[in-house]
Image (cartoon, rainbow, N blue to C red; front, side, top):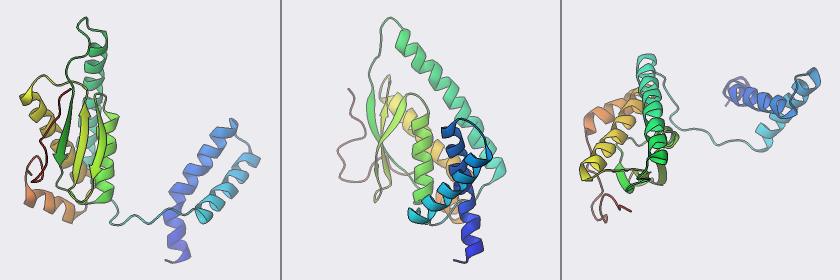
Length: 194
């Protein structure tokens, strides 16, 4: 990779590291800016990050759709978790579910996992990379129909993420594969209520 291209790819990371450096010092000064640049260059050369294979393509309209639904899920789930925490009957039944995804991109799988974990009431416990299966803890489920509804919600999140950040091949694969089975053959079952 040429020096200019490498610098262009490192510029966002360098900028972020310099910003963090200045925030850690708590005050802006030329000395903090210059020392931050020096530390950022040193860190990125001594401890380089592995190259991201495949990259991301941002589709503006799909990104707006993803952002809208993510923020809506964030508000609704926050209200539901707050209500569960203060209601007289307390917490009810939770579940751990497995959801097999259709995308095969490491970067998209990471974005999906992070988006699911950031929404209150669910957390990704495991990612079985070869099977593309997420193990997700759900804070509250009412019944088996609710489990299936939440599983469908995970697949919708995958659909929105792939359409917002995926390559043309990722989107075509999503359209071609359609819905997947809930679990790979030989698994123990879709959920373990507690």
